[in-house]
Image (cartoon, rainbow, N blue to C red; front, side, top):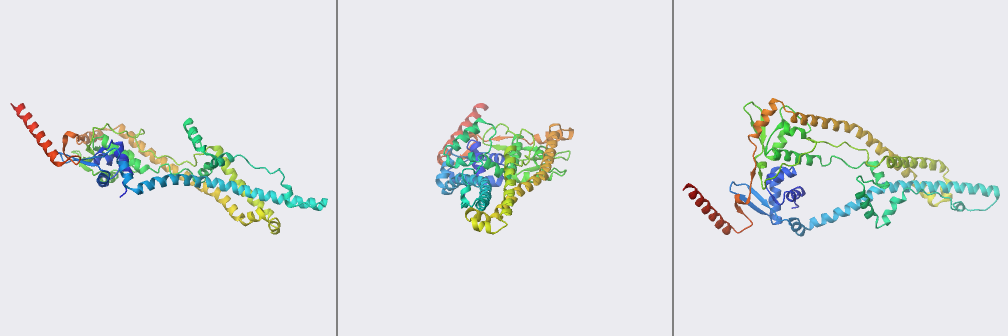
Length: 435
């Protein structure tokens, strides 16, 4: 069984000694899922169980437990290797769209020049009686655009990646190269809210933990999408973190989460979102700068124009047959080159209008959550009473080494002897204090 990476990361962040509530709050996982994952991980990575006299369980992991897992699971080693390979493959895929566009423009430009040179040579033969071949006119006058070569030559330059990392450290905002900007122009730069749900549950868990396991619905409202008077939005929170509702004498509902009140260490209040609410990021058309976007769009237009010009020149079907070579090859794929140019401009156009329709909804949700956060920071009398009632259920139970009744770290017989000695010492202290 492959360990859940969220549980692994939570254990590391919480210094390798955790309770189920610690991990569930840190990772935003359901309590039952977190408990199953911790049990499996403790079994596979040589972790230990520490049971307090209250019956609460603490999981203790060795600091090198990730190394133990990697040595045990060949799959983890393969996944780590594949992730490195995929990063390279995906980068090649990203720049391939720009390379195809440039290659398309170059092919059509060369074919057009070849046709024009051949036509001029034919006219010169008729007028001057000379017997020159089609290829004689290429000479040294062929113009090759140079602006993209700085981006292509990195493939053959072993020091390119090192210099790019240096540039990243020198500038706060990394500037993508032209080939990367072509992919960004076409498909954007991914969903800016891809980890929104994960961040939502992590923040909700941190809010509950910071309030020592007891909250009012209004304290969770800034982190959900929709709020209703019946507080149905709290049902998934109760289900995920094993919470319980409690009705105040005034008939208001608060929620407490016993398992999130148990922790392995006396932890400071978790860092909550600086905004005080869950803020979605608006979609951006592209992270490329305006010059790169203009150049990418301009090359797409140029690709279509060249395809139309070449199609007009090749209306006479005998030209490609007479010239052969690259002209014949380009004629055979001219439909594909033209279609690529059309799709190259159509895809970002459709994406642009899709973003224009999506971002207002994101802004509306953010404003709604912000208003809830403002209302929470400026509570009325009813909300203050509700928060005061919730604080009656707030507590934090810290399980220290002195609270342990059993741990799998040591032999059971040794633990029983130590526990017996502890009981004797406690009994003697009670006698002494009584006397």
